[in-house]
Image 1 (spheres, helix red, strand yellow):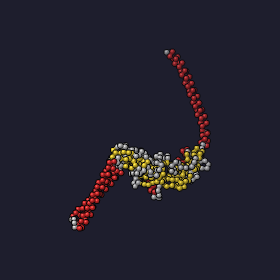
Image 2 (tube, rainbow, N blue to C red):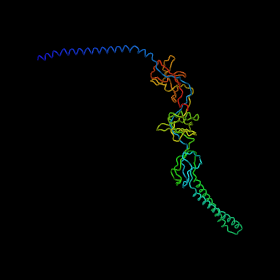
Image 3 (tube, one colour):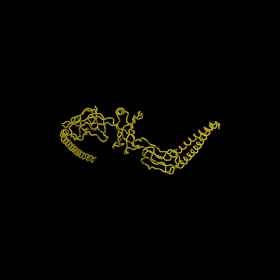
Image 4 (spheres, one colour):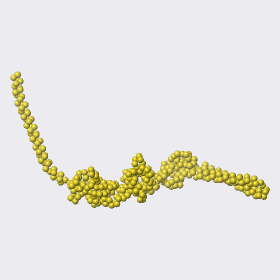
Length: 400
């Protein structure tokens, strides 16, 4: 028991010294942290206001321009040939020869194929022979009629013979006419053995090989001929654009520009020829058709096209790039650069937007310098570091 008391007495001084050391260590660390924070605050607070007041926001600027702005309405469509003809045979027979190559340009009347003509030549000869025989009989009947008519007038023959011969002559005349019709039919059938192109165009894939037996009732025909020029483009526009289209069409023919599907390259120039008589109620679109000369085959049947219809041209309007126009709670506005290199927020009223260029109807005059890029960091009165860019020139496609 005395040992336990002695050990307990010895333990208390050890615990007291450890606690004292720990408290001193914590005080030293806390003081160091406090000193660091004070030093940081003193070093960071003072220059901050000066730096923010002197900083200039980098922006790009350009001048608002006054120019003519063509108003184009764009729609997606496809090239449609005016005529597509599937060439079929009109008589049955063996296909002797194919006179075209796939993809060849042909004209109306050009020979495309030849059917064996010999059976039809024989039919024509037979029809002509029957006609010649009946013509000979008719000539003999007419001679007999003339002879008996004279004898009857002299009282040497009964009048009944004259009546019989007149009926025979009339019958033979009808027979000769039938023979002539048969000969014409045989001649026509013989002509059908030569298959020619009905239109100018481009032939497609050959559907029948030489040597095959073809029939007039075959569903596929020999080949398809597609008219390539002129060609049409069928496209659609929203019904909201219909009043502008009809108003412009009433003043004259409207120009249509055909572009590739992505709008990156111009293909051809044409004119509007048709506006559909009703709006498609499933999508609210109205169909239009434009005609193109297409001498260089820039438009291909079935190709998807971006069509642009010129409805009017706004004269001498103030324009800026569309990206310069901002939209806020109170409407559209732009930032205008002032002489002291600060900016002014200017409310504007916008007009049509064409290919990245927007017309300004009020708020900014031509020649004023407008902020094109960098508006996200601006506020009214902010100082800017301006880099001038070219003015509001149209991008590709604005003037096809």
